[in-house]
Image (cartoon, rainbow over all chains, first blue to last red; front, side, top):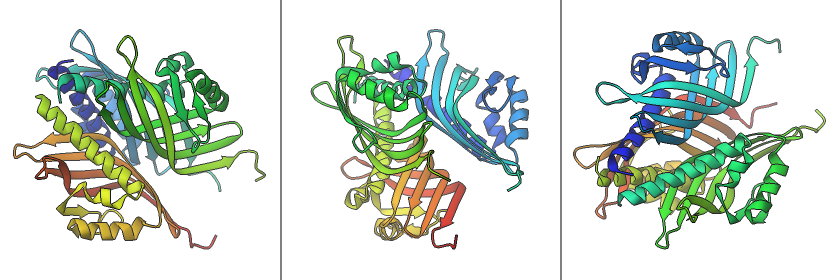
Length: 143
Length: 143
Length: 143
């Protein structure tokens, strides 16, 4: 494993770190820049949709969590550099969505693909969330 | 620190990532391959047993969590490569065992030793779990 | 990115790992050694104070959590080596303070600066905690 590969692995870890941080601090423009324009994001185990395109995904996301306090944490990345200059990754994850109307707490894994842009910076090109466990409570329920 | 040492450190991090992922997705055959045959696993602060041998440990594990939804997360690894070609590691951890009969939520540290097999792949040879905090609730309790 | 930079990045990750571990296992003398003497620690979003000096911070800390069971976890470090031989870092975090009088559970980010000491070992020189979410319950409240 040569220094270029270490640099790529660390760069992808920090890319995902920014994904989490920009999402939870609602820095939507900076969040947009972590994705390729043709992002495919599959949150059907989510809750969420299958989104084709970064703009479609961001519209879905901001509609879903724009009013919520959120926490998204990623753990124990398994980054694999592929022969064609792309990369794959799996991350264990935990999230909270504390929305005015509901509280969601979930655990699962992100399965991802990464690609460099014209400036050589890594971006998230594909993202699929699988779930181990999902707790949901409706704040509007009668008590 | 030379490139070989970086590669070993990253390989051990990904080894432990697979340990977590194969356990929580119940891929028992793949989980088996992350351990040496002579694994010593000490879960006496667990809850669990002191197990000598990978097969003894896996029998104990599958009996304990085979029917449960589980989440195991590892954080902030402290990997140390030792002079004899082995390695030591400490991981902060969190786990959930959501079993039909009980719910367990715990925090602590894994204290581990690693060794390469005949193919040069790192495996977990020793594993001891210490606990900071353990929440247990019996689902059969009268409400 | 050269091997020296990888070694520094990994050393800072392990420095922060010891910060978490020594705090939660109450190894105060070892915890002291992860900081510079002129540490600036800002826990005003905490709960906590703005502390100038490692000794002031440790007095505050031990007073606040000495009697509590605590868990502090750090995630997805963004470590940046700066041109002047110092470094900056951002860590996602989660903590529990289970005190005889209250239970606190929080999520946020550490924003940090690091500096090497006269032996070339990295230490935490500045630390500021921002919060996404903080749950607090008073154990003395009437039920």
